[in-house]
Image 1 (cartoon, protein in one colour):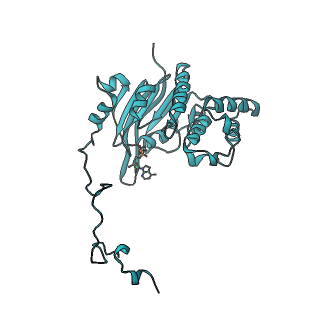
Image 2 (cartoon, rainbow, N blue to C red):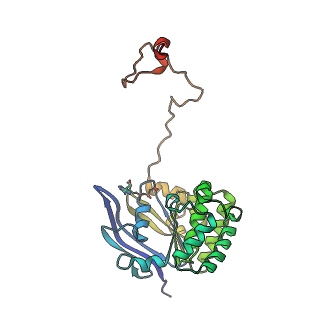
Image 3 (tube, rainbow, N blue to C red):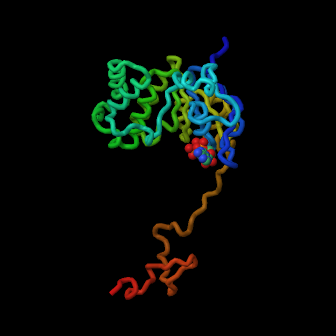
Length: 283
Ligand SMILES: Nc1ncnc2c1ncn2[C@@H]1O[C@H](COP(=O)(O)OP(=O)(O)OP(=O)(O)O)[C@@H](O)[C@H]1O
């Protein structure tokens, strides 16, 4: 049977000035998969996801959501997507409960349905005790969880999550993993960017390794790992590992700074440590 593609990216290119952030990315994400995007810092993951979610127009190429061209009808594509906002994009002067209900109503849900789902989500994310607290007063991990909940309230077909487990405690992480796995089993599709390889191995069925704006490998986790541990495979694809450099000056209990006669160092800054007391204290 032909698998349904939740997402297809075809030849995506994005430049920022002379920097080519995304360089001809092709990717096919089947429905009902948890698809990890992994890559070093600055690889182009967020830029790729932004072009998929209708936030950033590609210079070249196309992004499709269930066959619908994202950039010819952005609103229609967005209806299928649950996008986890960054912490600074949240209306953080609302309480957790208010934020969820508001997010649901923005997506066209009736208040009572949104409220019922909001309570379900607060419970699932271990936030029911903080439902009446302002989001601005949430910790980093709590903020991640409420952001993920806002992406889920309208029951989207595809969830797009940028680093969803950052700062989240291990118990909450395991609970979120369970929620995502249940969602995938029910036919939902999760696209998740992460640096935590162990986590990707645990929750993702598929993975794409991205570096310098290009896809270096993609497929099921087993195909990409190619018989290796995924992290080892990642290092072999991406490179960049080097011998650890012991910084002699980072000793902790190493040498004490030398009290130099000269009050100026090579950079031309005056060292307060060496300033004679009569100069340091104006009398
Ligand atoms: N708005 C922008 N203006 C200029 N350069 C940008 C902009 N957004 C991203 N870039 C550059 O594009 C490249 C890819 O960035 P991107 O944020 O997509 O990487 P990433 O893989 O998500 O990185 P990380 O894992 O560190 O979050 C980087 O070199 C980044 O500096």
